[in-house]
Length: 350
Ligand code: NAD
Image 1 (cartoon, rainbow, N blue to C red):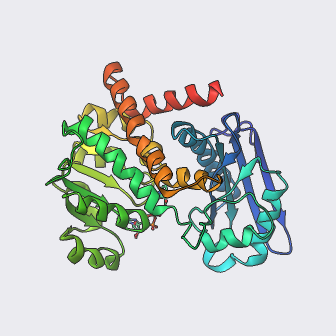
Image 2: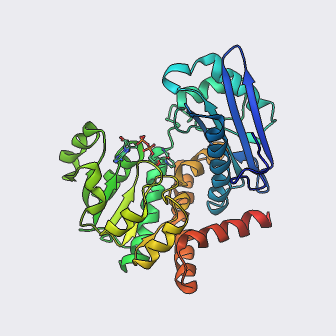
């Protein structure tokens, strides 16, 4: 499996293949960059069709974490781990401990956390064999990052709504604002509640019918079919489900003037950013908007962590986006490449 010639290889500092015959572990850890600090990034457990697919995913995701941490002002670099396995069938304590030993062998250069296929309970098992784990929670509180991610997306939306719709931040900034949420899972549910409390009118869609029906009464929301959410007559479209939600076709159909959501890798490919810009739709770079969870995990590593301090740090997502949107407008570019440039300026400078 060639690494140096891989199209997604981006001068990653280290790519480690790990195997444990007894537990069936087959994992890849990619450390993209540690200039700003140890590489933090989640553990994804997924039944990849091939080792090549797993390698592509871990190279892309680890690089994304470097950018995310740099723009979130964290003293961290970017890394990621993938385990080639079905989390429902293959995830055993033995497999997780074997994973933990591999992480431990890196001596703290890489810190793991939750991602698709892994949760807080799994982090506790890994923590039996290595201290290099985040997302555990403290003092009886949950380590789940999604409420913090939703808080960050809310701040991101405040900035995007100002720059994209001219509605300045105030108590009634979201009053009557129409927002479509694609996906009301962990993050989408918290975000929907925040938006409802701020006076927004919600349109919701989820492939899991139960997920939306549970919320409609509480949030007085309109429900539409998953395939119709991109056509909703709204001001803001919030992708909170899977990656690659923004394809050229979706961009043609969107009625919203602002896109701001939690999903990772929203752009199906880089050119979609230009298509959004050409249609006058303000795109909020996903890894900036959804950094709330990683900010909270980073704070868990500090002795002086307090919810108010974490919340204040997450609020700075809005400030960095103000800078990104202003620079994008000044340079006549999409906010997506502007965010990438600003992140590189930070981690390349150290
Ligand atoms: P989740 O799995 O809890 O929720 C996703 C929801 O989207 C589910 O309810 C699912 O049924 C729904 N969905 C899937 N496909 C859909 C479709 N085509 N149309 C409508 N709904 C669909 O995941 P989550 O933790 O809420 O994360 C949501 C997104 O945000 C993911 O892309 C994730 O990578 C990203 N993200 C999450 C966090 C976090 O803290 N959880 C942090 C950063 C980024």
